[in-house]
Length: 415
Image 1 (cartoon, rainbow, N blue to C red):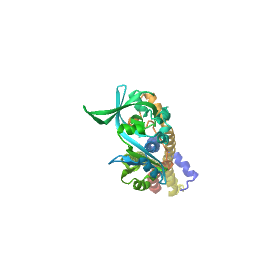
Image 2 (cartoon, rainbow, N blue to C red):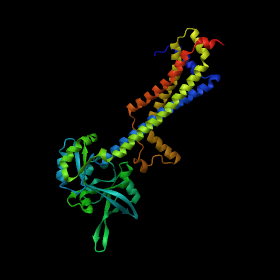
Image 3 (cartoon, rainbow, N blue to C red):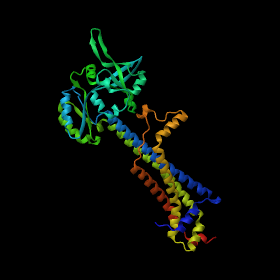
Image 4 (cartoon, helix red, strand yellow):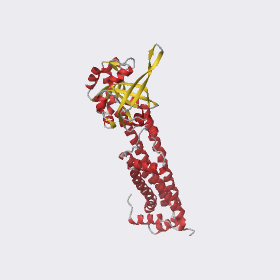
């Protein structure tokens, strides 16, 4: 649809407010603001949802394996040989035998529940998310088997620093002549890590594999083998081959099955948010329709005069289509610019708001992540812009069609 200079001139003239057209201009202004807010909010929310999912997935898979072998009926014996066979599968990068168990951790009169994971120092160092985020201490003492590495938030809860001892209390007690007593063992803290995920930073304790085997009574055996792949998305395809190697030694799970309900909930929430926020744009589009219809009625005499001066129905249609579409086009452009700028700086904005108003907008214990993530997906951004433009263009089409159908003879008969 090509617009002439005359058509744009008349369309812009109709958009400028005069005293008797003030209400129409107010409706156009509300339409502009509605589209701006709808597009901007959609881009920001979708970026945060994408960033939250990707960041959460990266941290979950950075700490846990892509495929996990669990010895359910009995501990996994001969784990070194089994891990070597699993490493021979094309696409497998790492196979980590480990011992995992729930404990109560106490220190300085404080106690919290925690998860102990026992693995070798080499396997710990092979996980960049863990090895590169040791804030205090080093792997040197851990490699000697002299202590444990704990999360930063767990250290804060227990009021411990490097060198302090924590006591692990196992729910599996020891039978003595005086009855069953809890199994307890004290270990010095040789390192503190912080991966930025609340669950891990507040409840994980990493111990040397021999120490964990001794504490949990795994004699020459382990409870899990965690497998890392060159591509996490290949977990479903490689799981059957790994399961054949494992056989009766354990049950094999891929990360999609272990976290299926969690990530399915994220997808549902993301789709629902997209639909709800799109309604803002739909409401703004209805404002365009009402404003344009009122403008057509107000300009009926002008339309009739244009027709008698030689303007065609097509010219009238394009003039009124341009008045509505320009509101949508400008609102979409400004909203997209604001939304992208906001999404790129959202964590800095969050910190400023929390500091200024003394509120906690992103509680890590609820959101899992310590920072507010954001990832702008270019395809989704284009989709949001396209949806907004299509809705506003459709909203502009009907009033323009009505303006083009006005009969100048009927309009001017009683003038």
